[in-house]
Image 1 (cartoon, rainbow over the protein chains, first blue to last red):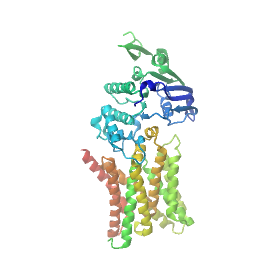
Image 2 (cartoon, rainbow over the protein chains, first blue to last red; image 1 turned 60 degrees about the vertical axis):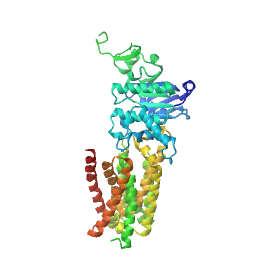
Image 3 (tube, rainbow over the protein chains, first blue to last red; image 1 turned 90 degrees about the vertical axis):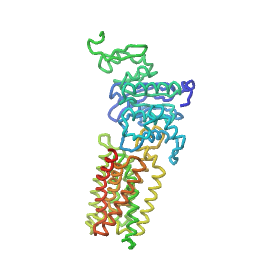
Image 4 (spheres, rainbow over the protein chains, first blue to last red; image 1 turned 30 degrees about the horizontal axis):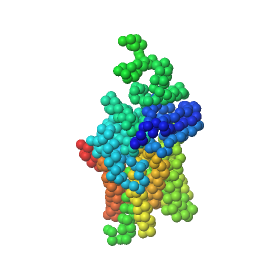
Amino acid sequence: MSVPITEAATRTVVRAEGLTLGYRHRTLVRDLSFEIRSGEILGLVGPNGCGKTTLLRTILGLMKPIHGRIQRDSTLVVSYVPQRDRLDTILPITAFEVALMGRAARSGALQRPRGMDRDAARHALARVGVATLSEHLFRTLSGGQQQRVLLARALAAEPNVLVLDEPTAGMDVAGEAAVIEFLRGLNRTHGVTILIVTHVLSLVLNFATSIMLMGNGAILHGAVDEVLREDRLSELYGVPIHLGRVGGQRTLVVVSPGTLDV
Amino acid sequence: MFESSFMRVALLASIATSAPLSIIGVYLIIRRVVFLGLVLANAAAVGAAVAQIVGWPPEIASVVAAVATALGLALIPPPRRVSAESVIGWAYAAAAAATVLILAGTAAADADTLHLLYGNVLAVSPKHATALVLVALAVGVMHVLFGRRFLLITFDAEAAQVAGVHTRFWALCLNLSIGVAAAAAVHEIGALLTFSLLTLAPMASLLATRRMATTFAVSAAIGIAAVCGGLVAAFQLDLPPGPVSVAALVLTVPAAALVGRKKQG
């Protein structure tokens, strides 16, 4: 997290060349090449089933591409915040113990958590606003609280790159806004590269510095205003979509017939 | 009761089998792969059955069979269209059928099958009891040293892998430790009690406790109490120790559920 942004901006975090992604009998994406630069906030968006998770898993090294190659900067610390409902909550562990897991990879297999590891876990919980829940069992927390604890676990690792899969699922509007504001601050002050995957387009409209829009077997990657166009989105999602601005902020409205002029 | 040396050996063997099985069984429950315990216990029984036919040492054959099964289940990914649990179910059916079919050709088929299913802790030799203690110590040390890694891959293997933890290696180590402990136990206490210790003691503990460290400790205590209780009941009431221990473990589950509910309320 201590990478100065001026230095970070010159580095390539991930470089993909000629990627074909999918499964044995189903190809989702063909011949995809892109770069993710340090300090970038990249929103990976698209309709359900377009291959966002497959691309994310490939970027993270959890899946191999069918063809092509992907290079990651191995000197960077990458933290992953998965979808909360993918985790099993039988385990009787506290929020603090979950956050402490973020430090595990930094220490050897035989090493017990040190004072600095415990401090980092506590600090991470405090940063995402759940310090008071540290002794609560993870499984007893609400969806939004669990999501924050998982974010704390990722932060405890002091990452250079933060990858989030549907990070605001289960949160109310205020919780969603707080998390986005927190991530923006993390990017600005510490230069953390953020890759956020979501099916909620409006979440990344004013947050991402670049967008990767997936759908219909194609991917568009570029600045938000370049990639997100009304005609393109309307065709991709199959409903009329209107993009506008309110108070300098981008807005997105799914238009029902006759409502645009109201 | 414990003046007789065979009872002291049986007590030692009971503790040496029940403690490690009850502790590592916690991982089977929280990873939702309880039938892995059943498969490994039955794979060990297949090893012992084959050894009986060809004249190999049954303890070694049991360990080899259980370890091979653990390796196979850890390394071979399940087909995409069925769950990992289904493959484990298939492996259980295969192992259980193989044991009976292999032993069907022996002169004392029924007795051999019954022994592999229920075991007899009263018949454990001092040499075998020592081997069980060594296996228990090895498994115990492994879990004290690497328990954090096992919990890490159990809670969220993908995030651990992204962070640079060798999740497949640690999953393999965990399965191997379960395989070795189950194989060592099967020949002495039978497949049924081995499976019950791997699943019922941890299940009861998870229902009654709210902290990970307590869960492991209480699970071991339940396992030891049930098996030692079975031993005492067998001596006093002239009952087979294995089924008595299993019955005790079965009863701990609803009792633990009541304790857990009382704690919550």
